[in-house]
Every structure is written in C-alpha cells, then in structure tokens.
Image (cartoon, rainbow, N blue to C red; front, side):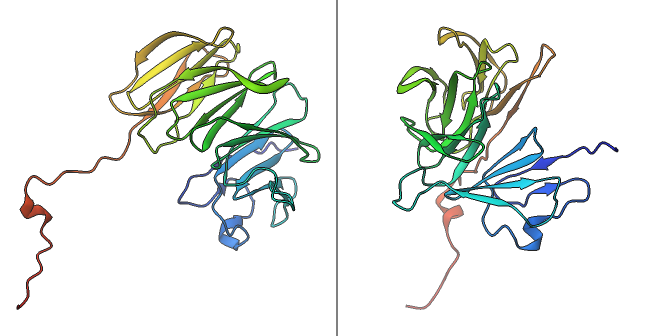
Length: 253
C-alpha cells in the first residue's frame, strides 16, 4: 500500500488545506464557521474546534462526512465559546482536553465525548493545552494571561503551580511546548525571551533572548537536542504631526 503524507494548516482568516486527493471542505461549503483548532490523531482522524462544538473527520473516508459533538448540553451546561485548543493524552487513556475562549478547559472521554471535568482559573481565553508525558498533568495557557497553569487531572480542585511568561498586553496566541523527556517546558513571550521551567518542581531554570520581538511560538524537536521559535507582531506607524491626521475634507460654511 502506497504511503500517503498529509499536511494540514489552519489560521483565523483562511481555509483548511490538505495534500493528496481529499476534498477541500471549506470550498465545498460544508464548513460554515472558522476552524480555530486542529489536531491530527494517530488513528487517522482530524479533530477540529468550532464555536461550541467539535467536528471529527476520518481521512480514510474523504469527503463531506463528519461527526459533530456539541460542547454544550441541553441545559446549557458544559463548555461554551470557541474551541481554540485541543490535546490528546499521550498514555492512551482515551482522554481529550479542549481549551475555549470562554476561559475554561474541558476534559472528555475520546470514545464517546463524555464530559469528565471543567477547569476554571485562566484569566483569558484558553489557546494552548498540553498533557505531560506521563498523562497525569495538564498545562494550559490563555490569551493575554501571564500564567501557564499546571493541573493534576487526578485532583482538579486546585492548580499545582503557575509558570510566568510576559503576555499581558499582546493579542497574539503564545504557544509553549514540553521537551520529549517530559522534564522541561519552554515558552516565549512579548519580551522576546524564552523561559525554561522544571516541571517536577515548577521552578524557573533559565531564559535567553531569542528575538527582539514577541516570541509567539516555541517547539522542541521530537528527538534531536534543538528547538525552534517564531517571532513578530504587527506594528503601526504613529503620525509625526497633526497634518497627517487631517482627513483633507473641505466645504462651505
């Protein structure tokens, strides 16, 4: 059987695109809403986050078919808002975590999407969720929220600790990552620094200046001793005089 390689991409303003012979659902008019989160499961299923729902696509059956799961129940309980982050537990326990712009994180059973927990505490909309390598802890980060929260999913009453990063005044989603050994977490911020934390203790270890601009993405290589970061943000020029602000409109009084 010929091996197929897949490439998926999603952002706020454009459609989802895939390689090989699959239907571009957005162009076909199936996806009426903007996709805010996208994860490719090893079981060859694509999980996509929308407003108050998840859609699951099976790449073995390309086309318009998908399964849809509402994150809000009939009595309006559950997780509201746009689902902006999705993560699977790496220990094959069948748990799925989703982050929402409603500032909540939810944990579900993957097989039937049964809601297990709702986690509160993020100051901004949750835009990044990631399980620890042993599957016992969950790390969540939010928009314009300076803290990454650590949760013990065996006891979710309170957070275990908080990890600081400079994100208070940027509208960007700032992503963090856990190194393959599971011991350290790296995150950027609007100050151009990458901070490294020890996940066993929650203590700050070191930082380095990765760019002179906002570090919005940081990722460890899956098996080599290296990492990648991305940086940048929009800047707008400030007029030097009041004349630049004039609309140039004249009329008779």
